[in-house]
Length: 247
Ligand SMILES: C[S@@+](CC[C@H](N)C(=O)[O-])C[C@H]1O[C@@H](n2cnc3c(N)ncnc32)[C@H](O)[C@@H]1O
Image (tube, rainbow, N blue to C red; front, side):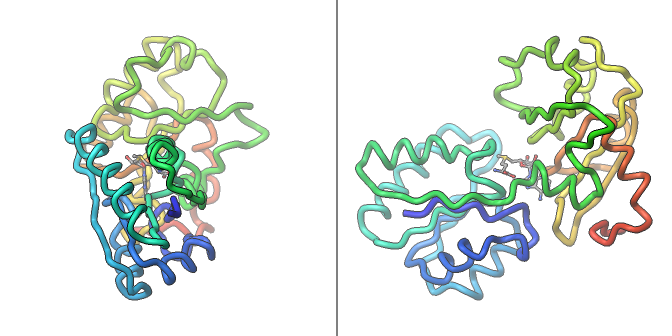
């Protein structure tokens, strides 16, 4: 079994190893999040049995159990099974849970990291997630499930760039929390929708206004939200940036 990251969506960001495994696989179990372009690519490049295990928001718990069951079932039956996951399997991807299940069931596996959208989507928007001029730390958070456990007060006070995954539906609430706990309302924010794909869009604004802007622009998941002064680099370089796909 191979737990493989498919990268953020642009098929050219697949690793050589991922492509090789896709071509050699007998079965590919893939997530919704791998995106349309990668789905097209696997249909073209692979003779494998393709199993769509796409998860829909709201049904995560039940669905993950079902995915785990399928992993074990196919893992016991076939030699070359590719479990293809969006971005990197271990960055908010539940890859950790899946390898635990494989080990529990005595199925050998290999992990093939992918390029995470948390870094690649900002990169395509001309935003380096770290820059010597700005905050000396970088924090990845989820805008969803686990946020109740997050120490928002500590986060807001930390001089770190904050990258939020799964944060579109709770953008207003999370922006308000950060401000309430001490993050400056003028902190620059970028929202990168469908980063690295043909549909990539970049929306920017201050922390205090970003929820209104995103609502007005009808921003949809998947999107990466970057909170921090590194967003200024986007404005500085954008006229020269070829990755930026202007609608
Ligand atoms: C369940 S997490 C999986 C993250 C994935 N493992 C990774 O490393 O990119 C799903 C979230 O990833 C982010 N995401 C994934 N692909 C994206 C893309 N092409 N553009 C922007 N955000 C993306 C969004 O925040 C989305 O809600």
